[in-house]
Amino acid sequence: MNSPDATHFAFDVHERVVIIGMGKTGLACVDVLRDRRCTVFITDEMPVAALEPAMTHVREKGARFVPPSELASILDDITVAVISPGVGPTSPVVLAVMNADIPIVGEIELAYLLSRAPIIAVSGTKGKSTTTALIGHFLRESGRTVRVGGNIGNPLVAEVSQIGPDGWIVAEVSSFQLESTRTFRPRVSVLLNLSEDHLDRYASMDEYAAAKFRIFTNQGLSDYFVGNLDDKRVAELHWQFSGEMRMEARQLWFTLRDDARHATMYVHDEAIWYAPITGDPRAIRIAGIDEMPIPGQHSIANVMAAMLSVLAIGVDPMRLHSWLSSYRPPAHRLMHVATVDDVAYIDDSKATNPAAVIAALHAFARPIVLIAGGRSKGTDFAALGAAIRERAHRVVVIGEAADEIAALCGDVPTSRATSMQEAVAIAQRSSQAGDIVLLSPACASFDMFKSAEDRGDQFIAAVHALNGVHVDA
Image 1 (cartoon, rainbow, N blue to C red):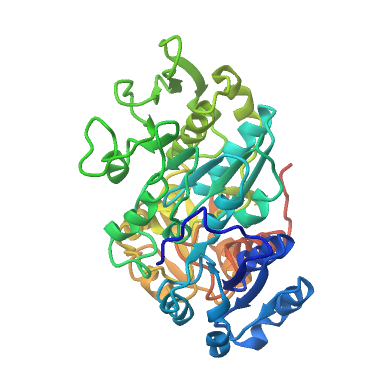
Image 2: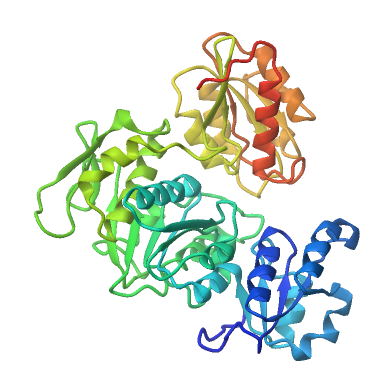
């Protein structure tokens, strides 16, 4: 894509902008840019009838919808295009804008250019939302003003407009969002892990990783990078044993191993320890492993990543223990919904890739009835199949990938459901006291649901509809 000069765009009355994509992010861009008195056009390849609810909002804000067939009529006057993360780089609309030699800015890049506050950015294949939410919680507990946005559910561009230079922005950023960044420079970047995901969009894992690595590309010596020493691809960035990929930012590393030599935060004697980056070098015990807010080894890694992120900007390490105790996990991330007849129902709807589901399956010691499936993202389900055969005693499959997942379940009994209500009903009949019914799909939601949140909400509603439901306080 074109490489815009960050100093070129005023994003004021002089700017004529076309926004590509009329989802939540595109409409948030309409709001922000119209408030800044830009002339705004918006386009989308969806049928016009499906866009009607968004059309009303666009008209009320004083923007104009242009169908793709008429886009050529306005391109001569456009100064910059803003692309939503769900729109692929090979979209005919994107190609038309590029062929007109119009600079293209992603929503994350736009948010960065408009932000007056420094940014902590979080990416990775799994754990992004939890880590982002944890960082936001720690910053609020420290007394700082903070806004949280991005891929976590609310557009970042809307959040940056609500905060001044004395606050902080915490952004969950996906590979899709990072693709279109050019000048994006977070004060702290976090890369949790890299495993197969979105291979329906990327030709290889190397291409997927390259998109993720854009999170630290523009960082300098005054910035920090927080990385996972236990992930092979991420660990290759470590300054002591990295290859060709180098970064300017100061590096902080976490690990589940007892490795104080290479990591700033590590696990020792069933507790998290921190080796201070300044001052007294003696390690500090932060919290016990049994105090993690979400079950599973991946929860420990997410907590350490969040802690290092806020330690990088100067919070008191002695306060982290109490702040961790007051944290409550975000919705649809290993969230306990209810207990019915001594069966726990867990909503992990935002587990949209196999690696996240494998982590969820190993987070619990109790027998598991798994609900999985949806629209495949082009990833290999082989490792997931092995985890299912090891950890689940029943599987209910849904969506377009149902047959693909069922084929890998081996001797584990498998049922098919055509709705979330039916899936929960089957899971209830297949479970017994002491079991866990786990919604952890390993797939995108768009074949049956509006979003991962909608899928989780429908799971919650179906659980609450069961006879004898008891929702724990």
